[in-house]
Image (cartoon, rainbow, N blue to C red; front, top):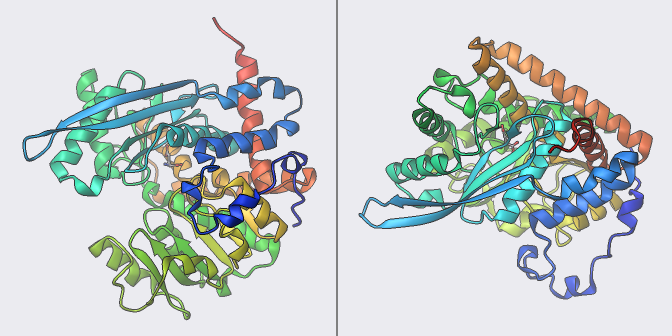
Length: 445
Ligand code: GLU
């Protein structure tokens, strides 16, 4: 499929000459770095020309409905008190309660959480689950905390945001560095404060506490599903494809496993510890076991070590960024060999990189569709919690696959009809649904 640029793309400023001078400085340290919220705003600017009369509501997309900053004090094991900064942002609730994960990371900022909450609004609308968009986070490196400190921080944070979350208001879930145990503590803290067990206040819980079968693998499974669909459209054979993956957590690890099971060769993996490479394909099950034991891909003996920057030069057909935002920028987009990029992470590609990839005919499956499998099964979990009736894993996976395929097909068709990128098409679908709901509900009071 060809991807002519949108009319809006042509009006964006060209990459500045200073960028080439500063080519050795990481993008996120450059003065003109947009930051995640700036990137999101550019993505909105690109979609507005396609929204027709709904464009009069577009300012709604540029303003989070509500943003809460909380102080999270905890007693450390050594008796001192530490303070962390936490956030919960509800970007939009026109289509339903806020929904989105909670991230524990040392680089979390309000700008980042705002962008992540907005991407949740678009994502939930693009796959048509009845949620608005929200996100939370704490600026902390959780690896520096003991288990007890992690629990106390999670509980205090949950209490602090308790005034705006709830099963019908805003439902958190796992994201970077948060997991089933953290969701169990969040559910328990909220329930204790309310005086009644409220399993539906978070998703991604342990299965024995109202969690859903299939939730753990759901994001990676969704990445795989849309990857297979897109590969079919561009005549790429998954069984012989070479795949590179950045981030080997819940998203990248599962996606790598499913691609390898389908016959693909996972030739390079990068995570926070470093980059490993194996021309003939990494043994993914062994690598998963290694990461479960030591916490990073480095030290895996059946692979070569690559300098981190060389990850972007690895010869491959499919690249799966499944870590953090702003990884594919104007500085490395020209070097990427893949025919297709599947965005397992949220916001991994900057608008400038999008333009370079588009010119080079690299197909980008945007985050708001590609990684929507997680929140889709979160929706199933929330429905199961309300009815206290639980589905089989087969039922979950079948429903997930159907939703992902339908959402992908609709976006693919729209991209072809309107001659826009898949990102702009996904934003047209998502923003149209959000703004239609906004308009139908009207302004009150
Ligand atoms: N954190 C995931 C995401 O970015 C899942 C959110 C959820 O399940 O609510 O989509």
